[in-house]
Amino acid sequence: MTSISLPRAVYLDLAQIQATPFASANRGRNGAPKSAVIGGVLRGRESSQHEKYHQRGTVQEILGVKAFRSRGATLSATAQLVQRGWDEAEALTAVQMLLLSCQVKGVGIADNGGTNVLLFLPEGAVTELADLADRHRAEFAPFIAQAHADLAKAAQKKTKAKTKDGDAETAPAEDDEPEEDTNRTQVLTAQAKKITDKKGGFLTKDDTLSLLRTRNAVIAAYGRMLANEPGSTVESAIQTAHAFSTHAVSTQLDSFTAVDEILKELGEASGAGHLGEQRYNSTTLYRYSTLNITKLIGNLDGDRTTARDVVEAFLRSVVAHRNAGKVSATAPHTVPHLLYAAVRTDRPVNLAGAFEEPVPATATGGYLTASVTRLDTHAGAHHRFLGVKGIAGHAHVTLADQEFTHLGDRADNFDEFVSTTLATIDKAITG
Image (cartoon, one colour):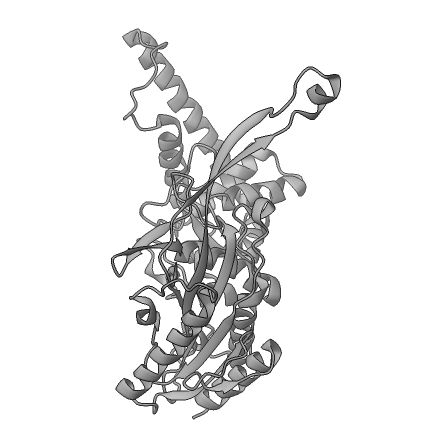
C-alpha cells in the first residue's frame, strides 16, 4: 500500500433515527428479534454485521464493483476452467495447488474442494486465478499427475490399514479429523511447493500470493483480514455500530395459520393446514456509522476520485438498502426520519449517549419526535464539550417539520443533503 499524505484526518459521521414497523429484520438463534440491555433497559437491536452486509451489497450495486467473501473461490475458478475445456478433476487440482503455493499458514482445502477459510476477494480475482492456471496448463500436467498418483496411494494405504484392523465398517469418532481433505491438503501442498521451487518450478510464491492481496474499492472501504498473511490485510475505513432502539421494547408474539387450499376445495379440511408462531417488535432505531476518509484514500493508493465515489455510494446506501429479514411478512420499507452528517477533522463522535436513558412513550407522539429532539440536544452538548473547531461542516435532512438548532444546515431533500456533504468533504481534504 502506498503511503498517502493528507493535510489532516477527515471523518464522516452519519447518524440516523429510523422508525420500523412491526418487524423482525435481524433475528437471533431463538428466532426472536435481536436485543440488548442498554441503560438497564431491554432494547431492540440490529447487529453491525447485519447492517454492514446489506449496506455493502447496496454500495456494490451503486459502484458497479463487487467483492465476494467465500470459501468457494477455488470452485468458481474450477468451473471457469471446465468451460475452457479442462477436465474437472485436473482443473480443481491445479487451482488448489495455486492457492496452497501461497504457503499461508492455516489456509487449506475443505472436504468440498473449497477453502477451509473465508477469502474476501474482488470479483475479478477468481478469473485471474483461472487465467493463471490456464496460462501454465502444460507445465501443470506432470505435477497434477503426480498429485493424483499420491492421492490414490494415500487412499489405498488408508483402506488397507482399516481392513487390517478390522474396522473398515466403523464410523470415525466425532473428534477425528477428516482424513481425506487433510491428506489432500498435505499432498497438494507438497506439489505446490515444487511448482514454486526455483530449480524445477514455473511460478513464484508471489504470483499467487498477489491474488490474495488484490483489492478494489469495496475492500478498501470495508477492510479485510487474513490470519498469518499481513500483506492481505486492509484496515476498514468504515465502522458501523449496532443499531438499537431509543426506547424500551418487548418482543411480541404473533400466531399465524396457513390454509390447505386444495383440501379446503375438496371439502376434506377446514381451518388451518398449519399453525405457527413468530416473534416481532416495533422500534425507533438509532443507527451510526463513521467513514475514515483519510484511511479510504490511503487504501485506494491516493485515488481521490474513486474515494469520492465510495463516499457518495455510502451516503446513498442509507436510503437505498433494505434489511430483508421477514420482508415478505412485514414489508418494513421505511426511510430514516432524520439523517445527520458531520464532517470532522478531529475524531469520530457517536451520539449514542443521547439514548442511554430510554425515551419514554407518549400518549400521542410515539417515539420519533422525542428521539430526534434528544439527538439534537445531545449534539449541542458535544459541541459545548469538544468545541466546534473539529467540525468542518455538518447538515441534516428530515421528514420532521420541527427545527433543529445543533444539527447544522437543513437540506431540503436527500440529494441536496448528499451534495452538501460531499462538497464539505472536498473542501476538508484539500485543507
